[in-house]
Image (cartoon, helix red, strand yellow):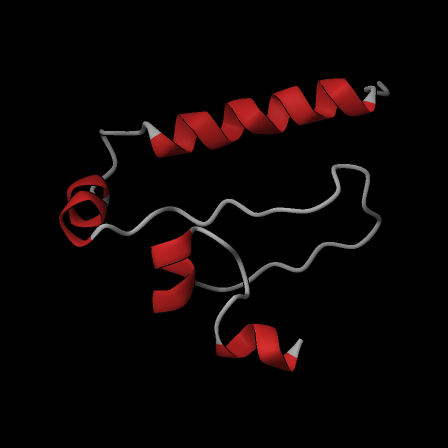
Length: 75
């Protein structure tokens, strides 16, 4: 099954929205109280390589962007 770039974008957008609105998660209230956001990712939906981080740091959680802290400087 091959998806067009637009279909991939829409599917990833749906995943992101589901994660952002998952109020049943035990982390939801912590995120709201501390103004932290889930770090879903960014980049090409047609990429051949993907970097996966173990857990977001403070900078990542505050901006919802992956690898924007110290680890991003190393990469």
